[in-house]
Amino acid sequence: MSAVHRRSLADAAATEALGAALAGGMASGVVHLVGDLGAGKTTLVRGLLRALGHEGAVRSPTYTLVEPYDAGGRRIYHVDLYRLGDPEELAFIGLDDLFAPGVLTLLEWPQRGAGVLPRPDLEVTLEYVGGARRAEVCGITPAGAAAVAKISSCET
Image (spheres, rainbow, N blue to C red):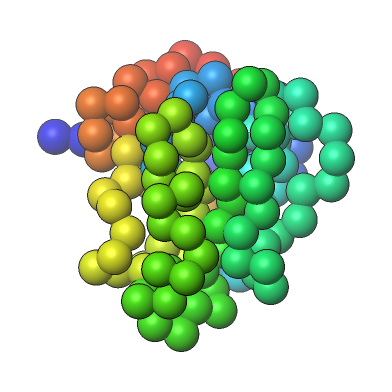
């Protein structure tokens, strides 16, 4: 059984606030970020990183595939698999580093790595419904369910 939190997102600031709540709820593990182009996945990551004290630029890793960050005493990888041609290509970007214990890995377009990626702890889906943006945060593992409980308590 998974834990689920749903939230309407009025604007980019609300998406960043959800990212900040995620920073407080998920210290390490694997987070799948699901949504169409422009849905706010990188905006969510920006909110998470800012909440942890990162002051530099936060770019979509569409072309670099992986953007590493050290923030809040954590190693964080922001990964975008949109341009991945085959899941087997993941072996060339350092899977061991991405999923090492104590690391937080945020994966955009995780479906492109199907069959190779580990099971996520948390899945965040960002979508447009009736002209408004909505987020659904689903805890897959016990750590993910605990994160959903913390995120739910941070509702703004």
